[in-house]
Image (tube, rainbow, N blue to C red; front, side):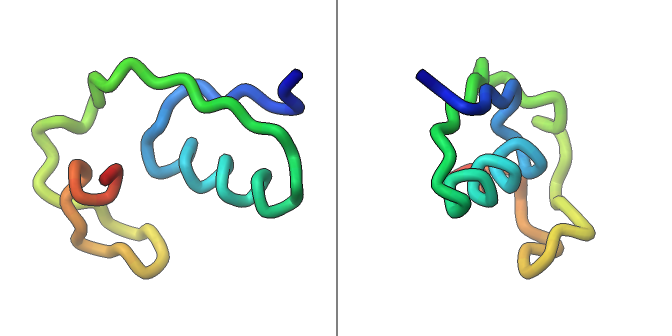
Length: 59
């Protein structure tokens, strides 16, 4: 049984999953591995990861 189901494994979904996991909640992340930002060269305004390629961020 999961406390939360997060749809999307992008920066926002992964960040939410980390926060909830650290709060000791059971979390399921559902992602189809077909990111909408596939053509993006860098992600910005994400704390400590500014300028990181989306594929590197997910890895």
